[in-house]
Image (cartoon, rainbow, N blue to C red; front, top):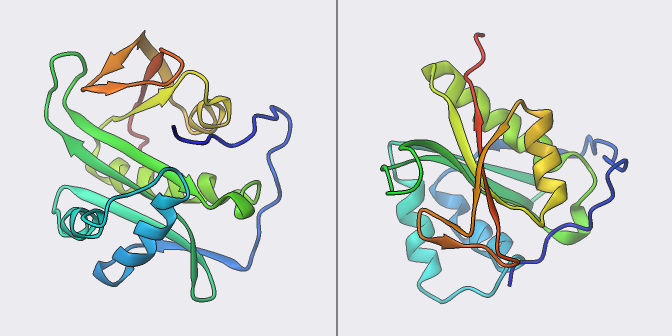
Length: 173
C-alpha cells in the first residue's frame, strides 16, 4: 500500500534552494525507479517500463535532485479515454523521497509539468486517493477542482475505497 505524506494542513514547508527541479531524460530512469520504490516495492522490470515512459512523445517527466541524488519524480502524460474518466493529460505519481518532504519539491515539480501542458492549451487531470490530504491540498494550490469521486477510476482501485478525479484548466501564459 502506498505511503502518503503525513497530512498536516498548515505545514507547507520551506523551499530548499539546494534542490533543482528539471525535465527528466533517459539517464534518469534508474533514479526514478529508486524514487518510485520509496512509494511501494517495484519489480525488476520496472526499469524497462520507466525507460519506455521516458521515451514517450506524449509525456513530460520531471525530477528533483540535490547534487547527484534524485529526491523526487513525477510525470504528466496522455491517457486514452478509459470507460470512467475522460481522455487527456494526467498527472502521474508525484513522489518525493520521505526524508525530503516539506521542502516544496512536489509543488515545484507539479508547477513545471503543468507549465508544459499549459503551453499546449489543454486541461490537466489527476486521480488522487481521498485519504491523501497532502496531495489534494497540493493540487488545489495549483488550481485543480474536484470533478467526481469513485472506488475506481481508469482501472485504479484506491486504498481506503475512494479516489478523487480532479481537473485543472490550462492557464494562459
